[in-house]
Image (tube, rainbow, N blue to C red):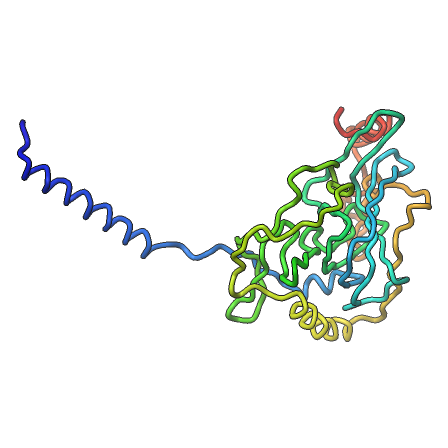
Length: 287
C-alpha cells in the first residue's frame, strides 16, 4: 500500500514520541548504584596490626619449598591498632617473581593485592609469616589512599552511606600503570610512576583517608577493650629461610571435638602428589 506524505509524517511523530516515552520510563526505573558494605569492626577484630603507610620496597624470595614469595615493606605513618616491631613493617605474600639462571617464572595468586613502590595504604595486617595473604580477608584488608581519597584495593571509591557506615562504590577512581613489567604481587615493582586517579569524577560521598583513620582509632579502642593483650607484630624478614604457608596443614579449631574428622589436617594422596610435583617443578604451579 502506498503511504501518503501525511501518513508518513504521523508515523514519524509516533516513533519520536515512543522513543521519548521509553527513555522517560527507563530513567524513572533506573536502579540505584550497587555498593558493597564494609564492616570495619570485623576487620579490626581480625587484625594483629592496623596502620597507614607507604610502600618502600617490593622484593622476592623463594621459600624452602621452592615457591616464590613477595616481601612488601612499608614505612609506617600512623599506627591505628596493635604494636609494630619497628618504624617499618614487612608483609610476606605467597606468589611473585622467581628467577633461576636466565629462566624467569611468576606465580600469581588470585584475590591477592598487587603493590608498587610509592603506594600509600591503610592496612589490616593479620597472621604475618603464617598465612598466604597476611591481611584480614586479604584484598578487603587493604585500602588505598589516592590523593587523600580512600579507595578499595581495585581502585573503587569508598563512600559513606546515610547511616554513617562505609561501602565500596562502583566508581573507579584509579587504575594500574598501563604497562606491567612484572606479574604477581609485585606487578609494578619496577615501575617508578605511582598510580594516579583516572576519573575526574569522585563521588560526593567519597571518604577522605584521614576521616577513615580517625574513625578507625575510635573503633579500635572498643575492640582493644575486649582483648586480653596486644602482642608485638613481627615483620617478615627476607634474610631468613622459611617454609611456605601454602604447604603447611591448617590447624583445626581448639574447641573442635576430638573425634571429628579433620580433613584440613589430613592431606589426601592427591594433595601429597600435587605438592611433590610443584616442588619438583621448581615451584611452578603450571604442571
